[in-house]
Length: 140
Image (cartoon, rainbow, N blue to C red; front, side, top):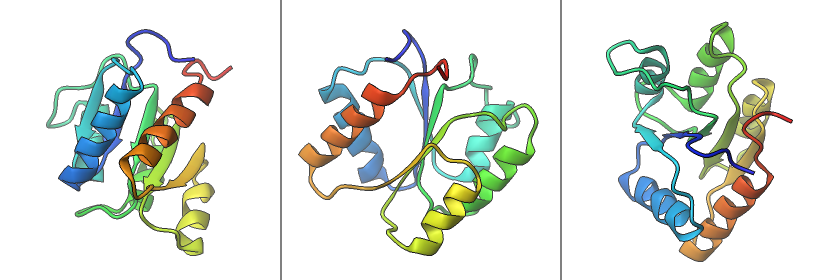
């Protein structure tokens, strides 16, 4: 289960999807910190403390959309995995893309899971509950 204060970094550019994730987390009782980056460049900046206040301690989980401006989610994964200080971070892709090529590209960078965004709020809340019920931030 989730450790107290274990943070999530949500990398998502769509404001409605950000609000939906936040509402779904609140509905299932998740009260830990949730940081939001609107694109991969900002997310890397937040993780490294470059141009942004560094997230300390680092987030225990990253929820990543693939369709992002400036730097795609796959490009973000490539840079994340290439950085020795960030390479072990746990990532779950949460995206609207059900394309096999996107799924394959994400798994090439060792993501924990690939979830296509549900259409209804209740399905979204259930998806967040499932993610968090199986998520062990200590990696055990």
